Length: 198
Image (cartoon, rainbow, N blue to C red):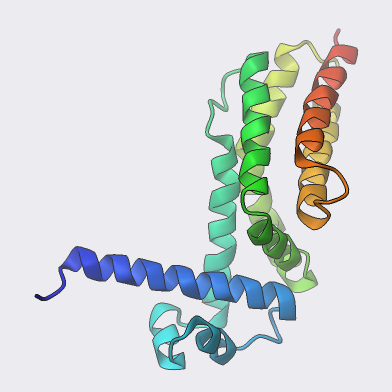
């Protein structure tokens, strides 16, 4: 029985995902410039020609990998970014964000490794900031709703604390247990907003 259009699309989507997963691993481990399409195709179990059928160039493949990461970062903020959160909503958001990271440590370790490569960082800093914008906006509204006298400064400190905790969770998961990191970040946020009230 011939395959349906939907089945072909599902196969295509799955094959793209395999190529992107392999590319992320090799880009992060060996470096973007040291990795070839041939290496990616071989590890993905496909021909080089088929790889080019999915991605016209290595740069296009890199863009797809980075964009997928940004989509996942943006999915951390599936909340109402234009409305202040109550305390319980903020706690739930922080817990869910840590859970997403801890459920796929290897993926995020590779993604951060890729993003820290000089050539990559230069080209994608602005896109990273755009992807994280809903998070910044949501935290800013929460801070101002608590009466902060320096919401921009508090946002900077909280953002660094959250990002730093994610990096610890990804790069050195054995140093601080994820549950401890999660709780310390939540405690830290409430300590900051409590001490910076008008």
